[in-house]
Amino acid sequence: MEPVQQQIEQIFHEASGQAFASLARFLRDLDLAEDALQEAFATAAVQWPREGIPANPIAWLITTGRYKAVDAIRRREKFKQIRSDVALRMHEIARTNATRAATEIEDDRLRLIFACCHPAIDVKIQVPLTLREVCGLSTDEIARAFLTTPATMAQRIVRGKAKIRDAGIPFVIPELGELPTRLASVLSVIYLIFNEGYSASSGESVTRADLSQEAIRLCRLVLQLTEDAEVMGLLALMLLHDSRRETRQTPEGDVVLLEDQDRSRWDRRLIAEGQQLIERSLASRRFGSYTVQAAISAVHAEAAAAEDTDWGQIVALYDVLLRLQPTPVVELNRAVAVAMRDGAEPGLKLIAAILERGDLANYPLAHAARGELLRRAGRTEDAIAALETALGLTEQIAEQRLLRKKLAELQAN
Image (cartoon, rainbow, N blue to C red; front, side):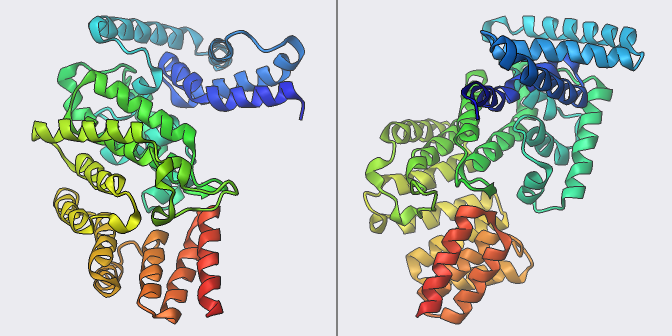
């Protein structure tokens, strides 16, 4: 591939999210923004190799996308009406943002997140819609995250786009008084963005640093808006997880489990910042599940070696988290912590209860955790069956390699 073509592809990869968010804010129609951005990319692919890459590629893409959108509107013979609507919307945006002059944050991605998490949109649609439109995750990836079918998820996303367009939902950062009703959904979205970056649901790489860094950046922006305890807790949680990112896979792309990671390579600067945020959140006495999860991660960070981990403290924190967030995944994580504290069999009983209820039946990590505990308990045949089930469910290539390695070791004995 020609060097200029490689540079263009890198720009497309890095600029698409920001360009789309700006076009969405301007056009207030997500489908129209998607079409306009695709046409801008197509024009750039032809024009840039011939005329050179512009000094500000993102601005070029946004401007070109706007022109393409106007052309599309003209072709639909609705230009006058929609141009008027856009002018009114831009005036509304300017007026609303003027009231926030002291705390203005010029970030269209954050604006797009708040638009997708508007109270007028069904809460079941807010997070999936944001993951699709802000992060560019596929419908299949989002469906897996929500343990539902791609067809069902596609319908939700279409309804969400239509709601934004038809209800004229503004692309603005809300006033401070409106933040509490939007904050939970926004934080949920940011954490899901981070999770997809920290542990990619599919593909070759274990991690996607671009998504992780974007989630951390967005959370920092939200913290500038409000020093809410859970914003601090979420930022702490992501920083503590991200401190381990460089040690989570080998240069060849294989998974390195937490117990086998080189802790001397963990980013102590991120850990220290995360710990300070946890202390601030706890001191507020208004903390929630993100802060408790961050505290669990901090216990791991404080252990000089895997065998020094205070599993008793981790189980106690999971007990608190389970009261705040009674979900099967939290229950599974607590079961693993119990196994690390008390031995494999108690953990296996807890996991069996979760699976017998039908919860997490299609969740590969549940079967992988069960397989590992069965291996530790010396129940080789059962361990092989559980790991094979996990292998059949996971779409992450590096995790598939790890599971095949474990299976080969068990089958060789």
